[in-house]
Image 1 (cartoon, rainbow, N blue to C red):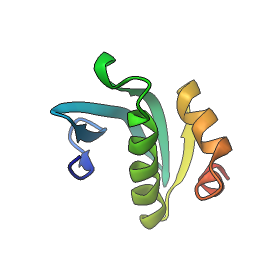
Image 2: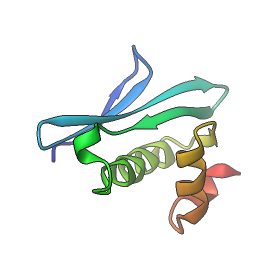
Image 3: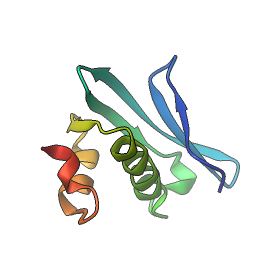
Image 4: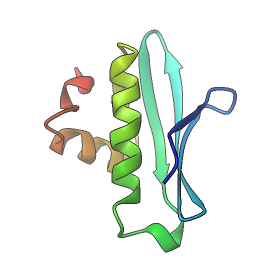
Length: 90
Protein backbone atom coordinates (compact mmCIF):
# COMPACT_ATOMS: atom_id res chain seq x y z
CA UNK A 1 0.00 0.00 0.00
CA UNK A 2 1.32 3.45 -0.86
CA UNK A 3 0.43 6.75 0.72
CA UNK A 4 -2.70 8.77 0.48
CA UNK A 5 -2.91 11.32 -2.32
CA UNK A 6 -5.16 14.35 -2.36
CA UNK A 7 -5.67 15.30 -6.00
CA UNK A 8 -7.01 18.78 -5.33
CA UNK A 9 -7.38 19.58 -9.03
CA UNK A 10 -9.83 16.71 -9.52
CA UNK A 11 -11.19 16.91 -5.94
CA UNK A 12 -10.39 13.29 -5.21
CA UNK A 13 -8.54 11.41 -2.48
CA UNK A 14 -6.78 8.26 -3.72
CA UNK A 15 -5.08 5.30 -2.06
CA UNK A 16 -3.25 2.55 -3.95
CA UNK A 17 -3.15 -1.10 -2.92
CA UNK A 18 -2.05 -4.11 -4.96
CA UNK A 19 -1.68 -1.94 -8.05
CA UNK A 20 -5.28 -0.67 -7.82
CA UNK A 21 -6.71 2.63 -6.61
CA UNK A 22 -9.56 3.29 -4.20
CA UNK A 23 -10.91 6.83 -4.32
CA UNK A 24 -13.25 9.33 -2.75
CA UNK A 25 -14.67 12.27 -4.66
CA UNK A 26 -15.30 15.43 -2.66
CA UNK A 27 -16.15 19.11 -2.73
CA UNK A 28 -14.59 21.64 -0.38
CA UNK A 29 -16.59 24.70 0.64
CA UNK A 30 -16.28 27.09 3.57
CA UNK A 31 -14.07 24.84 5.72
CA UNK A 32 -16.26 21.79 5.15
CA UNK A 33 -15.43 18.78 3.01
CA UNK A 34 -18.41 17.06 1.39
CA UNK A 35 -17.66 13.40 0.62
CA UNK A 36 -19.67 12.65 -2.51
CA UNK A 37 -18.66 9.08 -3.33
CA UNK A 38 -16.24 6.42 -2.05
CA UNK A 39 -15.31 3.45 -4.22
CA UNK A 40 -12.82 0.61 -4.47
CA UNK A 41 -12.10 -1.55 -7.51
CA UNK A 42 -14.10 -4.80 -7.56
CA UNK A 43 -11.01 -6.89 -6.74
CA UNK A 44 -10.48 -4.91 -3.50
CA UNK A 45 -14.09 -4.94 -2.32
CA UNK A 46 -14.57 -6.83 0.91
CA UNK A 47 -10.90 -6.44 1.86
CA UNK A 48 -11.29 -3.28 3.93
CA UNK A 49 -9.71 -1.08 1.25
CA UNK A 50 -12.44 1.56 1.43
CA UNK A 51 -12.12 1.64 5.22
CA UNK A 52 -8.37 2.15 4.98
CA UNK A 53 -8.98 4.98 2.52
CA UNK A 54 -11.52 6.55 4.89
CA UNK A 55 -9.11 6.29 7.84
CA UNK A 56 -6.22 7.89 5.94
CA UNK A 57 -8.47 10.54 4.44
CA UNK A 58 -10.09 11.33 7.81
CA UNK A 59 -6.68 11.77 9.45
CA UNK A 60 -5.72 14.24 6.71
CA UNK A 61 -9.03 16.11 7.00
CA UNK A 62 -8.69 16.32 10.79
CA UNK A 63 -5.11 17.61 10.49
CA UNK A 64 -6.39 20.40 8.25
CA UNK A 65 -9.02 21.39 10.83
CA UNK A 66 -11.91 20.74 8.44
CA UNK A 67 -15.36 19.31 9.16
CA UNK A 68 -17.12 16.69 7.02
CA UNK A 69 -20.56 16.28 5.53
CA UNK A 70 -20.83 12.80 4.01
CA UNK A 71 -23.19 12.60 1.05
CA UNK A 72 -22.05 9.03 0.34
CA UNK A 73 -23.90 6.48 2.48
CA UNK A 74 -20.76 4.40 3.03
CA UNK A 75 -18.78 7.43 4.23
CA UNK A 76 -21.61 8.47 6.56
CA UNK A 77 -21.84 5.00 8.13
CA UNK A 78 -18.05 4.68 8.45
CA UNK A 79 -17.73 8.06 10.17
CA UNK A 80 -20.62 7.37 12.57
CA UNK A 81 -18.94 4.09 13.63
CA UNK A 82 -15.46 5.61 13.98
CA UNK A 83 -14.40 6.46 17.53
CA UNK A 84 -11.41 8.44 16.24
CA UNK A 85 -13.12 10.49 13.53
CA UNK A 86 -16.85 10.83 14.27
CA UNK A 87 -16.11 14.31 15.65
CA UNK A 88 -15.48 15.41 12.03
CA UNK A 89 -19.26 15.29 11.53
CA UNK A 90 -19.96 18.22 13.89
